[in-house]
Image (cartoon, one colour):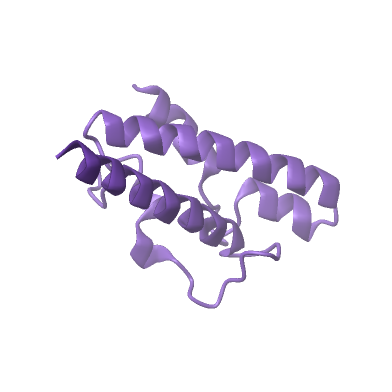
Length: 111
């Protein structure tokens, strides 16, 4: 069991599509939701960066701890700036896109 396998599922959405920050926000705990969103973002960024550096990028393979995050699972109607189903994953998708772009530009510079 890797740290990614343990921590990543804690960031992922529940069966209704809510991340932990979404759950706090939906219940009206906005300060807590913001704090949890920061933790989600920081941890997700660290796990994704580590995965890319070790050549273990996110995959839809059923054995992958990243399966919940595959882009095809995104809800195109989710709004990043709100709390609710799909919003947390949309926020993490933005982090994902930013890191992938940084990683690719770093690779291009190393060539």
